[in-house]
Length: 131
Image (cartoon, rainbow, N blue to C red; front, side, top):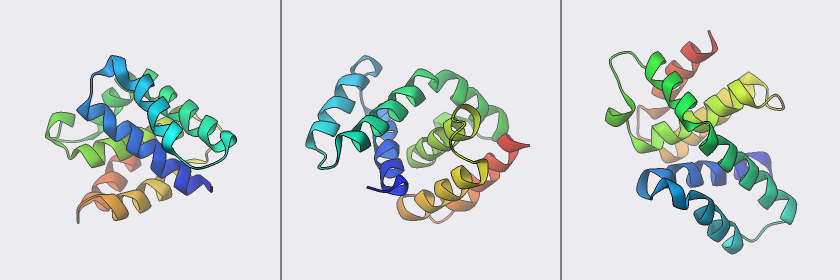
């Protein structure tokens, strides 16, 4: 499983936060990974990233709100918020992922899962986060 596919699984898990109680997130990750057919190494990578994002959610959400002019997370698409959470985590907290890769991958996920304006919206906020 390549990094893009793993990143999509991380995005899906982060997206699930919006629909479940936060205290059940770790359990949800376990159930999701139990059903995923991939290597243990890939599962561990996905689990580590998803839980790390969850643990930094408050800080990440502050960055989103700070950089989204006239928008708040509550008014944004849940898909866009989830994409931004993954990308901002990678940009600010993951030294293994180059910033340009995190942004490009976020835009690609936005094209696949978001609405018509998602790629430009995500790109705009991430550009402000980086600067």
